[in-house]
Length: 354
Image (cartoon, rainbow, N blue to C red; front, side, top):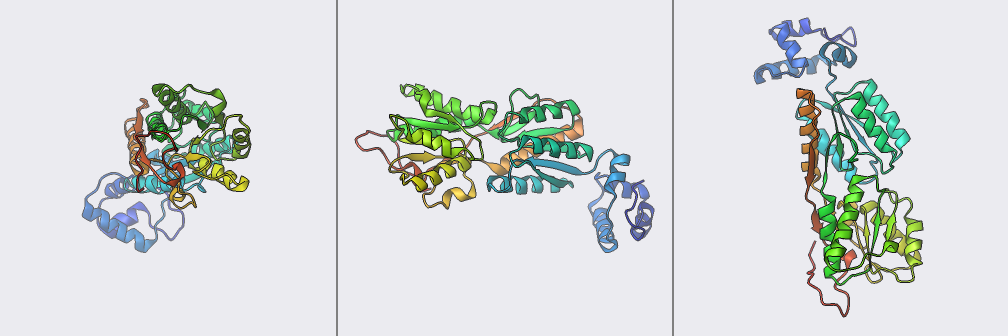
């Protein structure tokens, strides 16, 4: 029986008597199982008046689930993730579940603490977007050992035997770099993320393959790695400025890194796009609102969230842990930061009004 939290809230038997239905029907409703729509509305109207709040601890003991889904993200200050939170919350609410949001602040130690919390409640499933640190790989491996239903979102580790949903960073990166090449750029710097991060690794592969496709020799001096929150962009940009032959364009692993690079340009009097063309990835809300609007790749956040939730609930209902990988195509969004064709270069690129 689901216990009540206060003495003045109704028991299942009292609900059944008040609504004039069987106690089993009340049980089915509280367990999240299907009941007639008219019956569901009668129960909910009664519970609203009675201010009923089911005891989640008792529910988990009796029904073996809490109707809670954990969402662990690295940040909520970066506008991409609030969009993810809203999209995931809508998807799980439509299924009668509630969201428990945790934030790692790009710290793998904090991420482990948050995971321990989610596993101890326990939630019915977890969607995790790992930190940019390679240490997060061990945290994701923990989930394979504890065996809760889980899905990696946006960022993932190829070595972890778990399902994931992400943007096809390889193809999107190739499209973005090709656009820069079509503008006449042959010296393109790549400011990427940790090699252990599969999303960042896909971006780098797309960058390298596009250079090779266009007969442009890869220069290792133009490839950099940074934290995906942009916290070490100052040192990276100093290295770029110190190169004997500077690049004419910079590809950033994501919009936060691109924004930090743009700030460094402003601080040092470097002009974008006149001195450097600059491109990012993810098309966060801020990207089009900057003083120099950012050329980037738009990720289909809502579709990705729906796919992640669908995979997670399939795991919950079937107890299956088969690995499912879904990669969504990104959309190139052209703005002023990438500039126009380089002078004296024959180009094929056309400017977009985006």
